[in-house]
Image 1 (cartoon, helix red, strand yellow):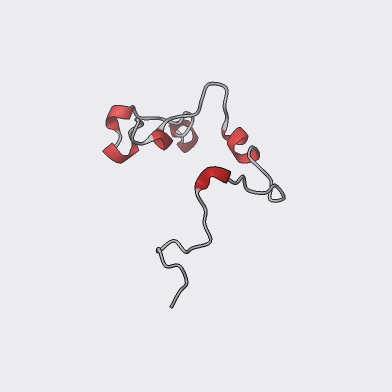
Image 2 (cartoon, helix red, strand yellow; image 1 turned 30 degrees about the horizontal axis):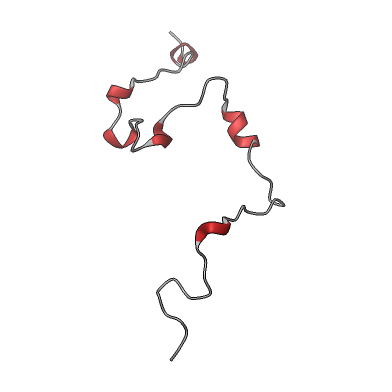
Amino acid sequence: MSESENESAPEGISDEQLPADLVPGDDNPLAGGLDDGETVDDLLTGGKTAEQPEETDVDAGGSPTSQDGANGAS
């Protein structure tokens, strides 16, 4: 048997064989697989471009004070 025959088909493992931090679930949604019809190329080519501004949330509660609660008074 040649080396190329051993590498002909990639093998996978089931979710049960994965370590706990890699098992998909509600507490770890990124461990889930791709949606039906979605490919890795879709992930690489999708999304916004560098020229597109970030979306801002007007209701985020931003204020002129700093995050640590200081109001700038000395």
